[in-house]
Amino acid sequence: MSFKRKENRVEAPKPVQQTLEWQLKTPAVESPRVETPSYTENVREEVEVLPVDDAPIKANNAVETVEQEELVDSHDDHADYLKLAEKIDSQSFEKEFPELHYFGQMHGTYLFAQNEKGLYMIDQHAAQERIKYEQFKVEIGQVGRVSQPLMVPILLEFSKKDSVKLEERLPLVEEFGIEMEPFGQNTFQIQSHPAWIKKGQEKAIIEEIIDFILADEKITVAKLREATAIMMSCKGSIKANHHLSEWEARQLLVDLAKCKNPYNCPHGRPVLVHLTNKDLEHLFKRIQDPHQSKRQQFE
Image (cartoon, rainbow, N blue to C red):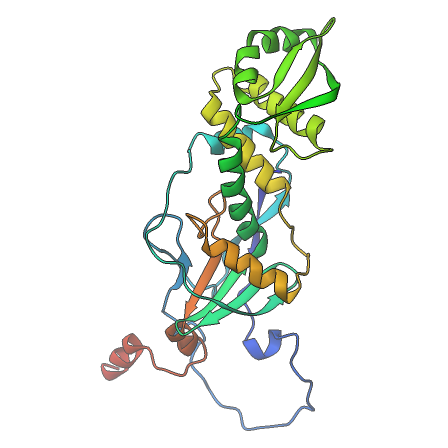
């Protein structure tokens, strides 16, 4: 699946007491009007997005009107996977993944966890994408070692143009672990495939792999393996609005902590966002911004 991006203008979030869905409704009580400073004046700490590169990325708090990119599920464009595969993900992080204590889920999309350093928000789809990507990368890297023969060969039909291209690239297909040969006019038969392809998914996955080969005349086995691992992890991961049990959510965090790079999905999006204790204190105005206090001294 690919993500088409559509920009929308999103208004600044309303004060917390107006947005929490679980707030208890209470009768309105008249109280003296109190002038308070602007919400943005004291919120100057930056929120840590853990990290796209080796160093943490900083993103400004969403307290003003911001650009929000709407993610649309359309990852079926093979060009997207091939473009991502050009940047082979070999990065690992020496930074130890934080020990997280899970305590809730929001809208079947985000997990919430905490530790002594603050609050963590986890995108469950991005987290499982990362987990599955690293698993598939290992399995797909072992192609050729274990092959699964088919009792009934799979027949695939192509256009005349694609058939000519594919016949020229049969050595690459075989190197990837798929035994395929011509079978009549513009038709090929699959006799065996890598053992990591699950039963019942053989035809669909092989068609995806062949589409990668036809879409990129210069594709290498390494790039083909990478694109396939990204595609498999994306299509096989839980989506938004999928509610997890407490055990499933905790296990997801355990598996994420074992990843070489637990901070980003294969597409480069952050898996988790960290709000430190200090960030939260600023948001709730429990501490005064030092820049604000110095400014007041000269007014």
